[in-house]
Each structure stands twice: as C-alpha cells, then as structure tokens.
Length: 229
Image (tube, rainbow, N blue to C red; front, top):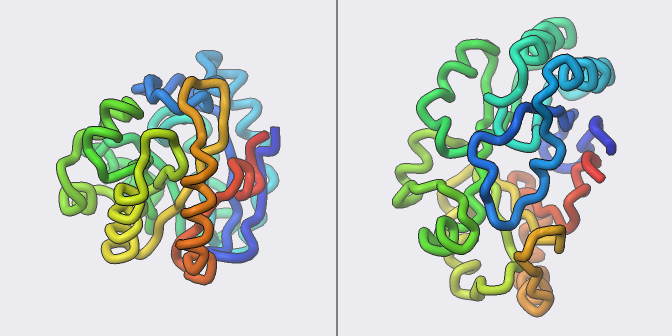
C-alpha cells in the first residue's frame, strides 16, 4: 500500500493516504475502500505517524485522504498534521468529508487555521442514482445546496446503469459551478457494481479536453494520485 506521493502536474501538492476509524456511513454500494479502516487507535496512529514523516512542504500544499472522512482520523494524528503544517510551512490543505458532516466543516477549518479545500464524494448529481443505486446517503437537492458547504466534488463515471445524458449533466454542472473537481473513472472491485466499458470509452473521447484543464483532475485508475494499491 502506497501512502505518500507527490502530485507534480495539476494542483501540485503532496498527498498522504492515512488510516482512520470506520466510515460513518460505510454502505455505498460501489465502495470497498473501507477495508482499510480500523478500530485499533494505536495501530492507526503508528502507521499514520510514519506516513506523515514523508511530508517535505515542497509545494506548501497538502492533501490528506483516508477511507472515509477526515473526521474519522484520530485526534492524535490530526494534532500531528497540524504540527507538520507549521513545521513545513504548509499554506493550503485538501480534506474530504461525507455529506453527513456538512455542519462540522468549520470545526476543521478552525482547528487547522489555514485555507481548506473540502472535497466530497458526490459521484453524480442524479439524486436517485446517487442515493438509491449507489446508496451514497448524500441527500442534497441541488448544486446550490452542495456549494453552501463543499468546494470540490468527486465524480464517478463509467458504471453500468449510468447514461450519457446523466454524465453530460454532471460534467456541465461541475465545469460551470466549481473551481476544482475530481473525476474518477470506475474500476471494477469486490462490489457488485460493474464498469461499463462502452460508457468509459465514450467519456474518454468526449471529455479528453478536461485533461488540459488545470483545475479538474481525471483519475483513469484508482492509483493515479500515487497512493493506494
């Protein structure tokens, strides 16, 4: 498992994949990332402290991810991240959170005392597909409601049951409403959700121009940020 990487092309930054407590929701139909979670706090902190030692502050920007939300990272690890932010002169932080923590985001901003870009796994703006098929439990009604809390949506493309119209609508929304977004092309995993190869090929061809957009990142594989396995 690779847990530290440097993203050199778009939005240059260091990124760490930390361990956390179990995801507060943990029922998304497409996700098996939660297998990286643990209930053993000492073990979690020991691993995280080792990973955090890699941070150099090269770009003064750090992204912290875990298999869930930043609010499930143990307090001792969060305190160590805050120390490193000071030690390495980090000026901006990327964090991710589930929709259910939307009213706690300011607590994390107050804790770290530097600008935070909050990511959220939206997957799609199609309400029924997001909450029924993907079982995301992110029940915001529209993009305006989402933008009240979060800065950067993470989208999911290439799942059987999605349509081209649905994806076109998603891309239109993120390109016209956000300064940053991540588009994840689905890769088959241990869940019952399956990849639609024809839809993936269509998306790659139609939206290849996004690769040239410095603000939007397309992950063609799960490990394109250099972390994970």
